[in-house]
Length: 227
Image (tube, rainbow, N blue to C red):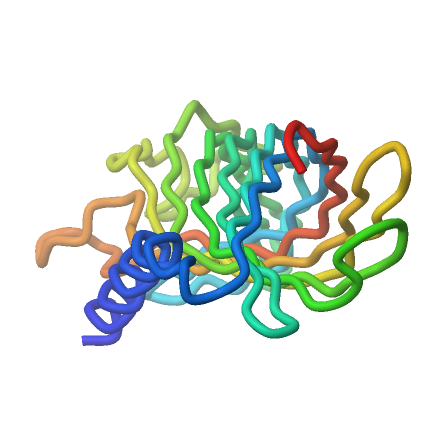
């Protein structure tokens, strides 16, 4: 039931993205297109059921960003932002059984978020403004790597191959954009909530949920193509 609710939210965001530009004639139209690069750090874990005690696995994120600002509604600047990112996620277990064992798995993905972009603050010239980004994200599993201190100790998740390589969920966050004469610098924090499972979750399978979650801190540099 919870998963269906998030899917309806996801569809609602997609509908909003498709209709916002169509309604632009009711507001002040803009035609600002910018592209650039981003880099950051993920603090990730996995929502497992049955639960596995975890800390955060730290991994890199980097990619390409394109942003189109289409309108201004009162003091709110509105647009769409698309990205293609390399992202490393996974989980790091907290093992407290006295065995001295440790286990972590890093998982590599290509991510494609499509975000509603909202900004508040100075529109022209140099200065700062607050930004919000929210929308759906899909991902494609590239590969993964395990680190296991004591391979002789086995649990259900150890050595288990990824069974579903297509990932999807919701991502959102906010931050600040600094506008300068040489481009725009964005400092942002985001949270990703996965709606898909990378292990099978039928009644005969051990896990009923295995979905990614992560917190990301990232810096983006954009330069204008059109203003």
